[in-house]
Image (tube, rainbow, N blue to C red):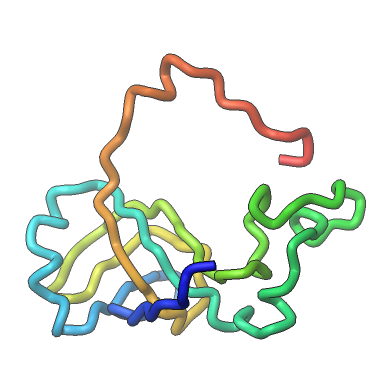
Length: 137
């Protein structure tokens, strides 16, 4: 097994009423240059409230915490209980004001640490393929 490595947050999620913001640490502000040219971004964040030794040991779960769904490996779910509690959300970028990004919505909780942001570049690859998902989806 490879040695562990460090991931440092670059910002946090902030909810204000029905609006959602991502506040980027000013030290990373230069990394936002050009982000306003994109309609969507991919936000990678840490599920810090699920980061316990017990939760990291969970490898199977019932999707959507519904026991009527089949027992499924965590890598085939969006469960927050997993070996590395990393999550991603595709978000519509509403505005950029300095180091604050407003997004339409995100699955993250308030104050969740953001670990990376990527511009979303659509692909035509899926137009030629059929996407398959399990029945419980």
